[in-house]
Length: 385
Image (cartoon, rainbow, N blue to C red; front, side, top):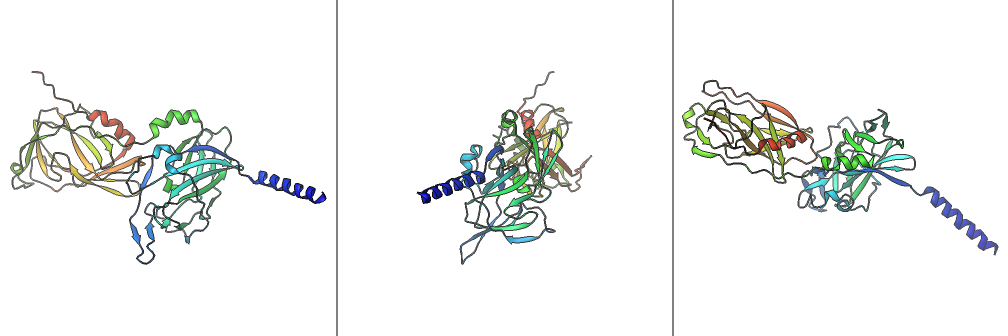
């Protein structure tokens, strides 16, 4: 009997200890934006058949220690497409990695879970966070400094070795946020696009902002095809008689100078530039040598200019006061980008009155460019005589 009582007390003690150590998790926020990052090229070891990637999105952290392979990286059974349904089907057949996370409250700490699905068996040159990683309370201005991370890679470049397809759970720990905190900003987690990422902890604000924040692909609008009046003959930039001639351009409503619009599709990025006709016949030049460049320095090349020459001077016939669109087709840019820079190199001098082909560098907010799509609908000319 005494033995039974002792065993019973031991069992109760064990249950009490388990209850005390059980982690209480409160979900504060989940990512709601459809973010992806392009995967670097894979190399395959001929002997082991293991795939290796050198992660290109890690910023220049050459002054940080490279600790080699990290150990004890937590994994999760979370199915990304199910737990984050806004990602479902978006990435089918594309060599991209989803950027997903959630913010929780656990045992009197705030924990940022950064999920990473292994795109290869080995990923090198990876980065999680350092002392630059903080949470800003946007109402009070209080900054909550990150304390540590799991695995132990705080402020270090590292490599990961895990089976391809495994979902890893990188965790960054902060002080507990006050119950009154509603809107925060997270900094210092570049591989998860958190370098000033706004996050709502108030569900009402979350729902209000959800539709505006989710990033979808665009459906490219129809472009009125310009007509080729005469082809270029023995093209010579210094002889305007050899330039191609077009009319019936894609006319648009009058807009301000340097007005652009963007459409992002799976296959390409379309950038439309508004052009003004000051005369009934004006020369323009293709933008085939222009590029888009993101904040990491990655370049997206122009593949073609719709209807017009890629990199030659040409004539457009119309009316003085016409506005029309030249549409450039670039390599597809990631959906998570918020800003992009458009660069047009300076053109070579050419023999023409008033010839001037300066280069340009313009920085764009992608949301604003998407809002401009409505300005580029076909707008037939109306002439009153």
